[in-house]
Image (cartoon, rainbow, N blue to C red):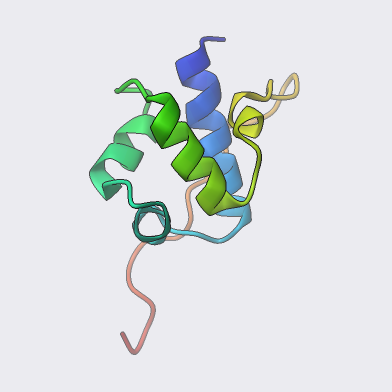
Length: 87
């Protein structure tokens, strides 16, 4: 698996485990939401500076974004879409 794929997999896994939307993670990390979306889709490269900011926002060490996924693990499911009722 490529480094780009590992980061994409771990980024979505960690984000969804914490119940964070891409928009909320973008706010907390100061990274553009569209860029986060493209990172999760493996469409763009990431800088070390952005890795630091995202890891900090997720409350993990930078290396957690490069952890190998367990054999047979499925791609993390996205959070349900749409705005919460009453918003």
